[in-house]
Image (cartoon, rainbow, N blue to C red; front, side, top):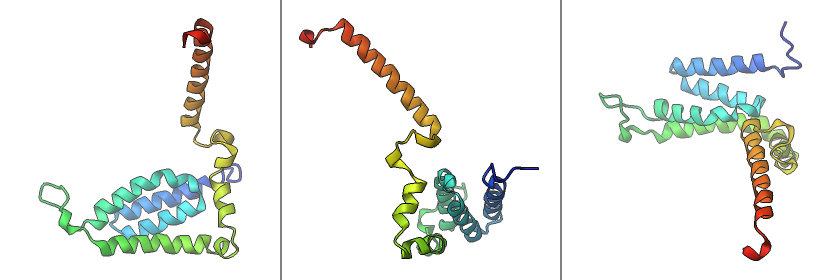
Length: 156
């Protein structure tokens, strides 16, 4: 039995992501975009996948024709399709965030989703990058202290 309380319903969310990817492979791009937008509003950690989705949707949905060699036919770009994708994302966002906006609580939501005021190393936010950042900071501070031992203030 999967402990969905401890794992924050990640099985359900992963299923939504896979369903969204399946819709993209089935050339049902609007449904895939809708499902991914819903997924983002369920859990913002999937935001790191959004650039890949955006590029894929631009390439496979917004450009309507390819050259025989498979490269993009630039003149086939459809602004109508970009606007329709944007409208889907906007409507999902409006339904999800609208009540918070109406109660003037949107800043509170974003401060909890992206806790920059607490520091980027707090609560395992972006752990890989910030672990490397902290290690480099420590190494540089030690090098700075060692360098200050070898050089007096008069030599600078």
